[in-house]
Amino acid sequence: MTESFEYNQTHNPLNPRVVLATTASTIGLVSIALIVSIYLAIILGGIAIVLAVLSRGEDGKFLPQAKKAIGFGSVAIVISYILLVNSAISYFTDPELRKSVNKFSESISGESFDDTLNELGESLGISFK
Image: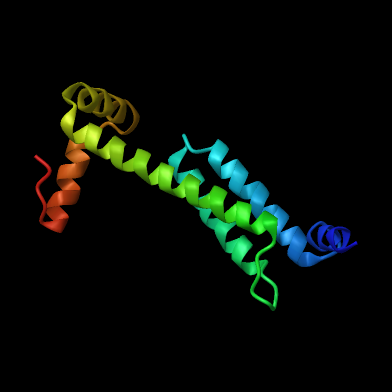
């Protein structure tokens, strides 16, 4: 009997905490699916974690859905930041990638990415050469 009571407490669609935790879990799962679009995964992972924390009850306990949301969101954020750092390192160390990024930037904005970085660096007092 206790098991069914616990199940009903954590799966009651009328309870706003359950709805919030379920939404957080869904957003966290979507953020993992969108890891390749780095920034979107970071934003959605953060939203999932915040919603999961907001779904806590007065007793401070997390629902199972909220625990999953925190895990999904954390994984999405960590992997996205790893990909972001890896991309930046690759840009500065791989000459072929740098050429292709500069070509792409020139075709879109008319200015190479290196020129954009140099302008930014001059305003901040940093050299990217």
